[in-house]
Length: 189
Image (cartoon, rainbow, N blue to C red; front, side, top):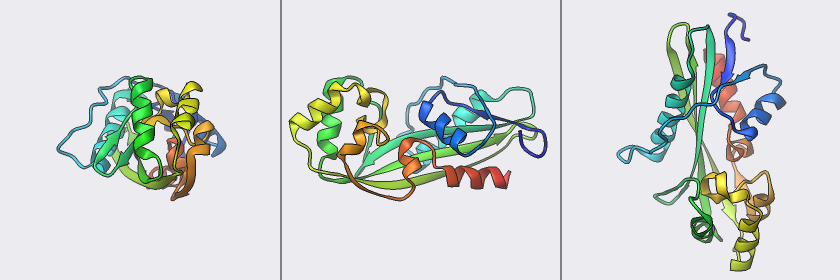
């Protein structure tokens, strides 16, 4: 609950986002939403991921006085957006594409105050550099099952961290929620 009596709500079932909010000491409830996560092709990846975060926050809004947090994370390699892989073959293709290169992880974050409908949002970007991966390393990682529900087919906080040489920017952003950016949005509310 914030100073004005608004209940804080996370519009996500992501265990990674839940953990980040718990570590920050925030008191919140979880209200996962199902929305069409199709990216609008006419928008830049930054704007598209911000729009998805806004849609998630709006979809979770109830009638109570609440502050709703929506977030969405994508991986961008050049001009290609890499979402969650549909199967192991697609996960292999994504990881092969990222091997030995630097890509961007973008997380759109939106905060909605239901009392007056005010929403603010931002997009945080972190550069992630992968080491050069062998096919055997990629196959072994896919065999863990970890890549299947992650944008870009990897989770940096798990076994996927072994694929990464370095990051530039907010590490939590790659996990799924840029805490400092979120705290700044909450402060603006």
